[in-house]
Image 1 (cartoon, rainbow, N blue to C red):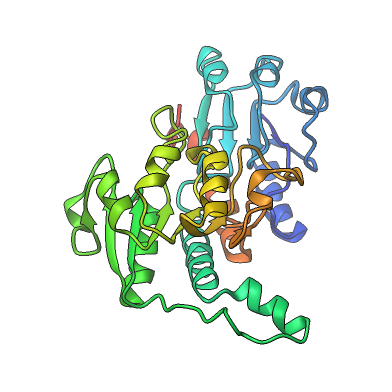
Image 2 (cartoon, rainbow, N blue to C red):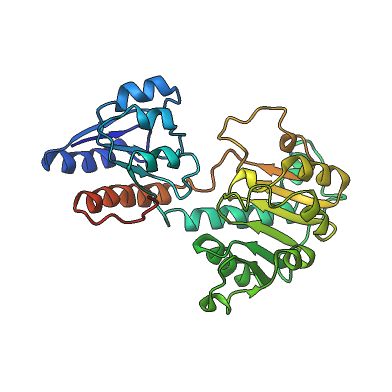
Length: 315
């Protein structure tokens, strides 16, 4: 069986080699490449692959349909909206994701953004580097704030645990409320969450229902000066509407780790020009610890699929 890794998993070469040697000892062929988003290059590299491994690089229907031996796509990522699932389904190609590897890293970056925005870290650092003072930039504490979590899955649940440790009240909106989470958060409607939260943090998947879920109307429901964090998927938010709300002061701050597409993000993107905004190039998932955990999950996915026991099933 030929297994092709089309982009780096973010682990040391020594770690990757250990996984590769095990596969080779079992009689498989393993090839690893650096990321290249050119579809023709991807096709050339994977044209005779039985298994394709990717992280968050787009995998189009053209590539999937150009690999006649392809049987399994092993995605080293939680979200899979960058994979043409319709093409995979049509070709009867199985797909798994790496659910759970970045729960801690995403939750911690979300918390980091909350604290940084509340304490004006970006602005006061600039003042300090330019012989300035804190005048006019005295921040606020996280303790006592109401944090609204949209999507109380594994990541949202970890965010709830962290902010509760800071003394926050936690509200949650989820399509499928779970009784086991009611000690962590109070389930409310999305509208009520937006109206009552000092901080709104998004941890939901991108679906037809959630695309632009946070639009001009929903942003208008938010408390004056509230903070919005998006470490979920970029298109969940209408960024034109959010940018306008930040400029007007309706929204007091924003922490944005995800955009409509993968980085690099063009300089003229509206969220790169707004006040009180922290923008990062999709780094929430990426910590040394999460990359190691992710690699383990991906190769375990492969082992289980080969044994006829597919896990983390998408298709």
